[in-house]
Structures are given as structure tokens and as C-alpha cells.
Image (cartoon, rainbow, N blue to C red):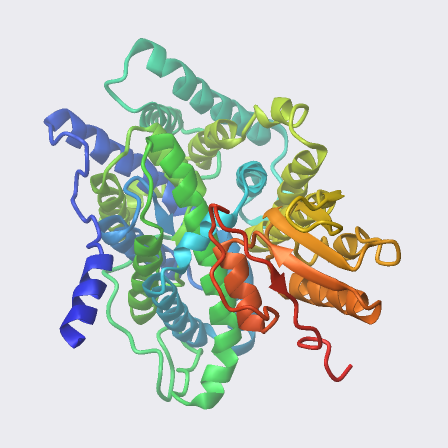
Length: 548
């Protein structure tokens, strides 16, 4: 018995695909493309990680270490090669309140718990529920994220010494000119050659021009120094000062758990939603499917490790993922290369990277925005149902004004309510005299019977005018939930009070099982799902309404 159960379990568990190249050919050309794509991603990760660390109220290295560790681990064991993960703004805005009130050590503890929750979600295969996200919500998510990425770049046009003041005069004009130059190179270079990825060429040419001519524009170094050592193991629990004084270590007790648990749940949910939606988007672009549960486990493992190495945690990054895919990154090599390049920038190449003008990186991100935004959604919205068009706009707006997790939940709820309403309006009945039971009246129900259509179902019957024997035929309907059971019982009770009999016919096996479990069927037999033999079921009343 035990051996049979273990054999069945082993049969249902498929080992994750951790191959480096997956379906791509292992050639020097492919490796070069992957490595160069990783370099571009690493350059784009630096200002993003620093900016999100500032948002969360932590040291820039906390963001950079998170980008390295989360990016490396998810690249190695993640569910979708080509995805890039790291510190993100969606998580940073949740972390800021925790850091401000309790300190960065509580953040590290929260990230560890967040990772454990994500691993649990992956082990339970909850990632499959991302399939419930409708396509209009995906379009709204993509458009909203594109706008958020665009708005995030606008902070680079402010004075590095005064975050409240915009650049002015020649400095602003030069910044805009360099951004335009970078975008022009990225747009035009592929028409001439594809030997060098266009984003890398755009960053390189613009940086060389700025350094050679001594142009005074904001650089990466103006944001913060990225110089640091290798991340080291750090236990955030205990007593005394933590990794970044004067922040104190988090006591290992229930009080700490009560503090960090709400934040960990929110961060885990946001991280998984953003990661799984990005996984779907990258999957559509690369033609790959699956890997949701594996990605959940990878994200969780990455965050647990990051929490123990002084990082702020993270999730998938749609902007950097788009850069990677559009630069040719299709395998785990690109993500691994990006993480290792980022570590090299921190440890040995910080003086060089800090001289890169922010305008070059902004130009790359602006091209990502243009490529990410679903421009065809304007055409789609004129052709799809109005409710779907409304959901696209709603999710886009909520993503920009609130955050991704709220937007997706709102979009799914609105879509589900709209679907329920549409199905609620579908239920109706055709009536006829029974051929098998002379004098009986048959109600042929069409449309699903569930909470939304229960009231409409009750209105279909003419109890006072009906004969003594009434047959409700469910051949073209399904009994879905408890509200449907309640509606059937209520109608049967009214017929019973009028001295008449109501029976059910052509119940499918799932409907039969639902009604039998509730105790409504007075005849315990199987109704042939092909309807070769039709069985009539009398309805037992007082099952759900007893005592009310």
C-alpha cells in the first residue's frame, strides 16, 4: 500500500529542467550573444538597484547584493530561462514602512520568511493559479508596467544633489540629447549590423562621448558609490548592533514574528504575482511554457539566501527581462552572466561603472518602454467587448497609481464578476409536454445554475398553473454551487406546498454527485451521462433551509 502510494507520488512529480542551454544550440555564437546580453542587463541593473534601495530606505549595497543574489539563483534554478530577477520597486514601496519603524535587520528577517512562504507556494503548486489571470488583465499589466518604468526614469532628470529640483538649461538639453542619441543608436544599429547588441553599443558610444568630451551630466556615481566587497553570511537575529549600525538585530521570538509576518505575506504575494506574470510574458516572446511552480521555488530560495546575506530581496524584473530577451538572451547563461557582471562591478569595476552617464541607461529603458507597451491594445479595445476594454484600462491605471498586485487582483475580480453577470443572464427554460409521462410538464433548463443565476432560475417556474407532475431537465445545464442547491430546494418546496411533485432529469455525474452529497436526491442511482437511460430524481426539501 505504502509502496503504491510512493510510486504514484513519484509519477506525478516531474524533475525541474535545470539545463543551461535548454533547447538552444551550444555554439560560440550563442554563448557570445548570451554573455553580451547579460552585460547589458547588468549595466541596467545598477541604477535600478540603487534607486530601489533608496526607496526602501536602506544602503545602496543592500539593493545591489539583492540584485546579484536573487538574479544568480533564479537564473540557475528558475522556471523560465531568459527572465531576470532582482530588487524591484514594487517590493521596495512595501519595505519602506518596516525599515523606518523597526530597522533594516527586521527587513532581512522578513525577506527570509517571505522566501519560505514562496517556497511553500511552489511546493503546493499554487503557481498554476496564474492561469486564472485573463488576457485583458495581462494587457493592462504590461501597459501599466511600461508606464511605471517610464515614470521611474524621470527621476534621472533631477539634480543629483537636490532630488526636488529638475535639471535646467544646458544640462537638461544635454541630458535629453544624450538620451535621444542612445535611443537612435539602439534603433538604427540593427539595420547595419547585429554583431554587437544595440543596447550595449548605445551605452558604450554615449559613455565614451561623455568621458572624452568631458560633458557635465549626471552619472551613476552621482547617485551613490557602488563600491563594496563580496556579500558575507549574516544572521539578522540576536541582540546588539546589526550589519548597518545603529540598526539593531531582530530578536528571535514571537514578537518579531508578529511584526514581520504581515509584511512577509504581502511581499511574497507581490513577488510571486509579478514574477509569474513576467514568466508568462517572457514565455509568449520566447515560445516557452510551464515552469510556474519551479519559478515560485526559485524565487523563494533566492529570497531566503538573500536575507541571510544582507540583501533586500526581490522578484522578476519586467524591464530587465525585456532587455535580455530583445538582446537575444534565451538561456540561463544570460542571467548568470548578468549577476556575475554585477558582482564584478561592485567588487573591482566600480570606478569605471560610476562614470557611465545616466542618460545612456535612461535611453535603454525608454526603448524598453516603447517595446514593452502593447500598442496594439488601442486597436484591440475597439474590437473586444466593452468590459474587456474597461479591464485593460482599469488594470493599467491601478498599476500606475497603486501597485501591480492590487491591479491584478482588481482586474481578476472585475473580470470574474463580469463573467458571472453574463452567465447569470443566460439561464432560461423551454417548456413542453412530457412524451414519457403523459400530462407532465417539462422545463428544459439552459445555462449554468449558480449563485448569479439562482434568482433567475426561481422565476422560470409557473407553480400555480403547472400540472401535478413537473420535470426539470438539466441536459443543457449544470448545477454548480450551494446557491444552486438552495434554489432547487426552494422551488421543490413551493411545488410540495402546492401538492405537486417536482423531479430532476438528465443530471450529469458531477451534478449528481453534488446533489447527492447535499442530501437532495431521494433516489440513489447513477444517471447515464450519455442519457441512454434517463433517471428521474425526486427532491428532498428542508435540507439547507431547515431551522430558518
